[in-house]
Length: 463
Image (cartoon, rainbow, N blue to C red):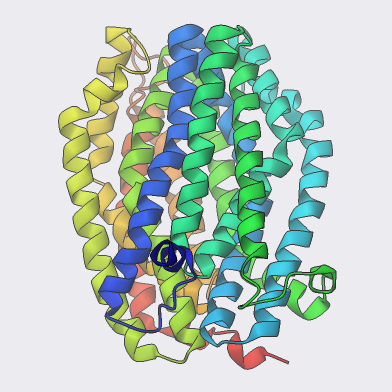
């Protein structure tokens, strides 16, 4: 029992071999990301199998709008994670306590705002995206239910992020697995058993995440040896609120850039018709698994660098960056090969339509060459964020997404128009993405080597 409690305790990543600490932290996160991806994957499988390909397309069309309104929580989670990691590494109890408290308070405020605004703008946004009439009602229903229950989603992600900032990726994993299991069971019950349709999928997700959010909060309440969590610490003091916003806003804007780009690209995707929309959903679900090691090691590097910069251990930071990036690239390459070999079998989980599976696998092969590049981008961006430099990754995302990806997607589509493809070839969606990924890796490496991120630590600014 004592050994189990030790595993679930916060991890000091300023001690021990850097590569070992990164791997120990990353493995539970990678398993957790697999479970997180299962949320969306199971949703899509259940919808595709029990309702149909159009319903699958409806869920896919809903995600750009959903992601746009979730950018606020991305900002809170990022700013909170950086502050928690650096204050924990510096062993500064008040700073750690205030950081956690202001994160909880800001999450409550933003959840209330989204609950009100989300349902009001859902249908207009979907219509603006040229969402086909055949799937408009389903997409709208999915989004409205999700926005009404947004508090469960937001607190689960914010609180599990705080746990990871403390070095406790195992507890976050356990609660995520609980959430995934509940989500799978409720998905099948609501859709296959109760015939609740697309709305049942959204309801299952928010119920599952609400339960896990409660478990995360309970775990934090038990960590009073490291920080204080009471009403006094929940007050949004200006010093900590401004710091969190300054750190988190660039990451929130980065996500907003991605979301806006997805919305613009979704409009292009919708113009290709229901088959390509459904194909895009399937590819993005499989893509989620290929991306998992990249995001995992990016987040692991953020926590590792944050704690060690807080402890003023730059020697460990440099060694950890080398080790972590090499491991991330290796794992990403291996998973990409596996998906290329077995991806078609996975795609048959979503649909029995052979034409749709073949089209999806064709697009997946185009994307495959870009995953190693994303591993480099995510690892080095995670390093910069952990140090407190969230502006540079934001600008790099702006360049690769807006300046490169969007014009390329529309440009390739325009120049490949013919009688068979009146609006252009759908490959334009994925070729443009690969080019942006590779360019992003090159540019990120250049900015990392300049080293300006090393001067962004927040510890000197403690009052």
